[in-house]
Length: 183
Image 1 (tube, helix red, strand yellow):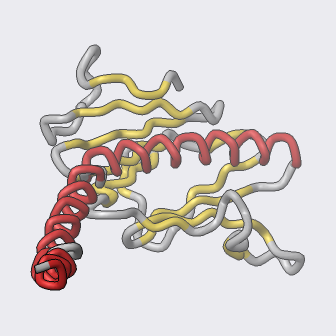
Image 2: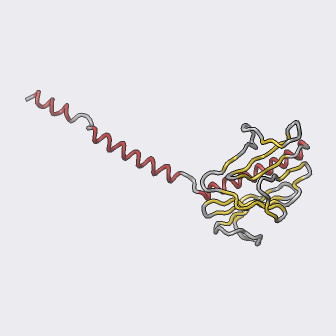
């Protein structure tokens, strides 16, 4: 009887292929659910991109004042670029290793409009951040999900952010939207 018991015991001491596959499928489903839940939504991405752009614009403005060299910024399809003057005086993008490198938005985040002195910035034009400040009032709206964030900047180079989560533009009403950046 002992060899029979050993044979039965040996047969049930491991997992079958079906059991292992079921565990792998359960782990895969749980991992997928975790990734979906952990991914930021488009509104969170728009918030992040607006904060990053505000910080970079303020930094570029301060750097232009400190160095005496103008820096330019341009919104582009799905992102934006910062520009510097080359030795021959032409505008060139900052290199990919720079903090001012070309950036693209993630998800469904996009520029709704970019205004300079209340006029739409023509496609392909740059805004110059000179050592003497920005020459006009800048207003750029970044949208993603159900959020619209408006960046406002002026001559001193300070950028303020205002969020309108209803998807409507702020229209300058006092107290409208939530202030994200002190500006």
